[in-house]
Image 1: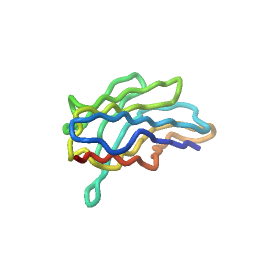
Image 2: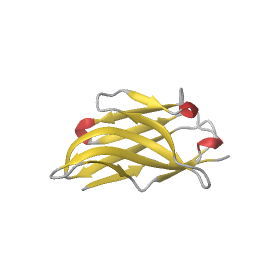
Image 3: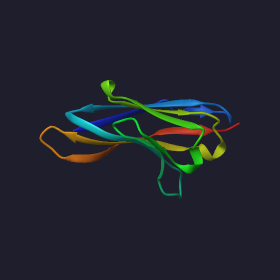
Image 4: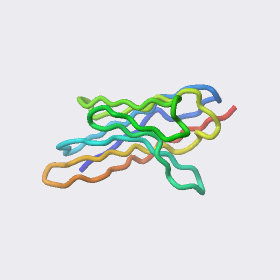
Length: 120
């Protein structure tokens, strides 16, 4: 139906930057919200940022002013620019997309996750 492929994770020093990408593919009719969540061991998955089909963004409190979410509708791609990274940003980052598929319904889809590690 819908497959999400994340990329851009890796190891970065405190204060550094990373840019995550997520590409959606499959029998997609329409994509609505696109977003990023993150999770660390022992904690619940939390919202990082979400962006609507019209480009309106919302951010979690811990990343406001540091992260920027954007999307390219023609490429079915959502991005997360992460600046001023700190140790608490270390997590597995998951792409999330609300999409309608051909001959189907609107559902939420998740990527496999990409590891972001902030360490000196």
